[in-house]
Length: 363
Image (cartoon, rainbow, N blue to C red; front, side, top):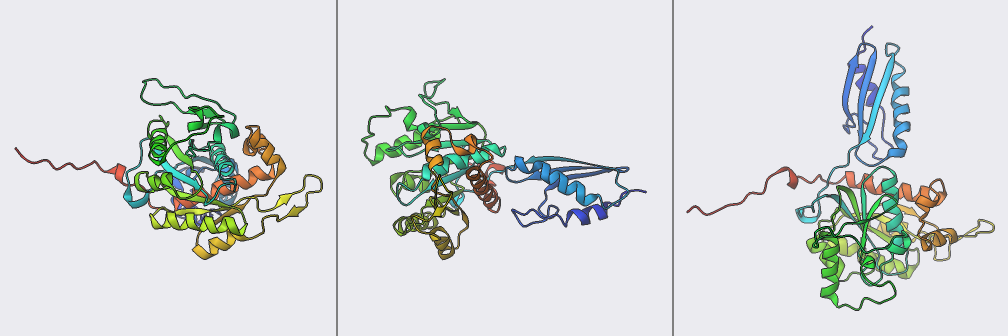
């Protein structure tokens, strides 16, 4: 008995991706469906990194098709296919960077750099090629948090090679200056340093570049909005009212310049007692969800105030790597999944599909 292809497609159309809410047929996850006698071969692609989910997807598809007795074997080849998405105002993307994610906060001290580092690591552990740019010129913290030191190598005397840590490509002003000396620069110098770190680093075929921005809405944020193609921004805040007020300012700034808000992360949502495990909302509760409702953006998740997390970051051993099976790592993976799925819902970058048109005057 031959396999009815229409029946196959009907069954596949009932399998829904829990992260996108779309069935795998209409979402075009099925890139190729081949029937050979009683054997079925499926080429399956996800538009976001989800390496840890591959076995689960394979099992779901095989189990769904098992209702057809005429099928003898099902082979499912799974991969992720991360594409470039459009930046604000149709800005042309930078070479070798498909998607650029700004991680921002309205004020300092909310754990933005910790979120940026672990978000980058979570995306990388799911199979994406990820870079991390520490754009906090006055207070670079990524070198210490990731346990890596510079300076970066230059092969041509003009550009820099990114350093590597835990599978990430990294650059930071912290690799170029003495860690104990303050950076006493005016705005134009800071903006110039940021541009050099971004554009003169030889990023190697990145799916995502995470930019750890300085707090506030200053020179670097303005440069980012006007001159850098950003796919979207993640806002980090604590539940405290003071932090929420500044987070709202940052959120409104990105909206004003046309940069999509990918979502809000509420950090230090509750303190976890290291002795009894009791949760205490030291900075309040529900603030992150509140501003998401007010501004109609996605709530990406709440992270606890955890002593072990602090110690791991100070030691240069982030929890996503230090304890990949732990609860903190799970929360970061969930946030990373939501961010990457949110990006897939945006328009594709089409500028690279067409050549630049130059009009020259005839002589």
